[in-house]
Image 1 (cartoon, rainbow, N blue to C red):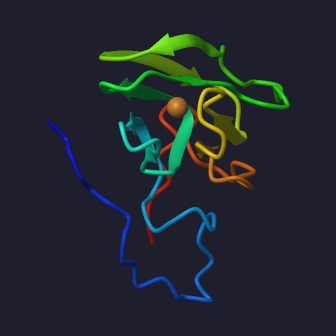
Image 2 (cartoon, rainbow, N blue to C red):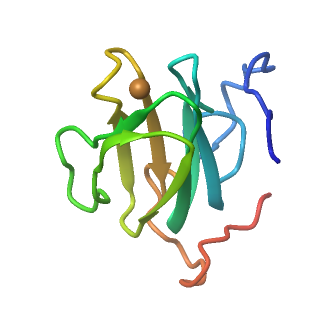
Length: 134
Ligand SMILES: [Cu+2]
């Protein structure tokens, strides 16, 4: 069980770092989990994902859904209905910033940043999207 790597207190300020996004301190990963919690939140609220990565939406005891409003190109399929006590995976093959919303609970939303948000693929190898860190 990966319960909590909570992005609560971060030592956030590094204004001159040429880092990828403002999405948080974590480097992009190829697989991540978002918990849709009974307290009506997606946790963590922001995920940095490699292109082609997969997110598992883990629904708890309270039902939620996931809609990619504005339906940007490359967005995965909606997770419709009322989902509780289940997990649904979605892949993100296209770089971009995807905001998603629970249509049951106004204000419940999250963001998935795929590909670092501005990565023009210098000479990184294509497959896994791992850029070497520093
Ligand atoms: Cu909800």
